[in-house]
Image (cartoon, rainbow, N blue to C red; front, side, top):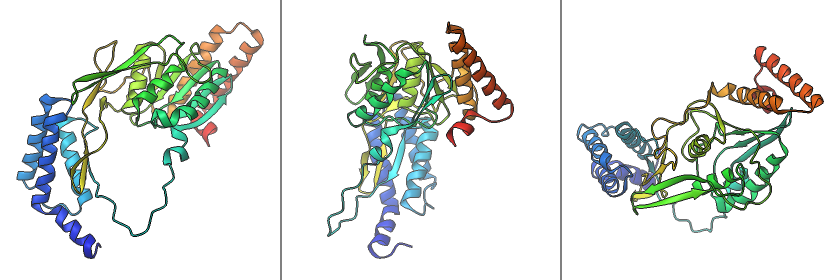
Length: 343
């Protein structure tokens, strides 16, 4: 249990005026900046109705209050980006704290497993899209290595999103040097539109001609969905797996509501230059729909079939046929590619 000053802070953060202050701060920011202004009043009314009904009166901790507000926001808006956080400033310290390690670097800026599968099919897992100014060097190394493969599988099943400029950087490796218009973001708070194009120059080698497959799940979200949606609509990639999470809105970071609470309020929305819309609330529908745990199998089989159809070297063609037979047999035995490659 909290004691002393910590206990006082917890109690103060939960009294009725303090709870009301959080809601009023939320209302002001939603009115001013939320990307869908026509929806703001309905969301605000849901918050105030819950408050008046006493739905928040029994809350025990600030963290629980933040979670309850988030639930109300999302129920009223169906916007999975809208969030409230218990986020007090760090406690003052008389001693200088050591500089924390960069967690993005420790996690390789989102670039996970890179592997050559039998048949010269490349596999790369991308867990998030880190800020491009930090991740471009590492990303360029991994993405350049994919040029050695005859077909490529990108795994975004655990990718919850991140930095849209990094999405454009990664996508650039799968097109030639001519810039391609990928996506736009309209920002309500500034009434401006940011355009995102592939890069005419990238460090290393491109993979502009290889068949490309992107694995998805219900956890694939936000800018990871932007990557999938853009490459699907440009007919550059085949999306394999489950429908994605359905979050096409963007923000500019956390906004301070009160000394103890912050919120993520989307102020922008993605707009495809091809469809003139986005995947908000509906997700990206895969071209080849299957369960998350079978997505790699399905993409690998499709890649091998395409390579077989294109191959003119009879010796290598026989090799591909044998690999496809082996893979099919393992799947029939209930052994997925995820099991015998990743463990």
